[in-house]
Image (cartoon, rainbow, N blue to C red; front, side):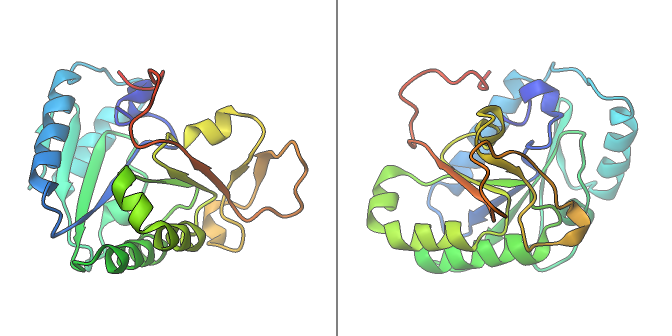
Length: 212
């Protein structure tokens, strides 16, 4: 689980989950997520100040559900909130639900929400099952192109773009100036890269080192 990889203390730890309000498996997914986190509840803090930050964030979100050291909280996508604007670094995961029912409309709404409402533009991850990907290939490509993040990962851990030491890794170029503008790696010396896009299968064919 990326929520607990390296104790959850990486610059790629998920913080906001964007779901469709009308997804038929939404509740089952959230239940499975909570069950998985309960199995891993004993992962300890590895960052100074995490306990104090957790106490502060949990005080701001008393409606959240605590699962060991992690907290899950439902948020309103239309209301600005601390988790949209500040990196928690203490095991907070908020989720929002997009209203559009049709997959293409949901993708547009989700992309706009991420670009306009969330601080930070280092990386994001898009998860799409194989059938949906075949049917809406063009819409998914348009969403990838429109997401203003330095790395956009489809069905794969965004950190692989960094670990490859080849693809550019950094902030989205032309994006928000308060999140940084530098890059590392870029071994092919692309001139002013806008973003890195990496893709993988919906169901991995081999064991993934960052899971469990």
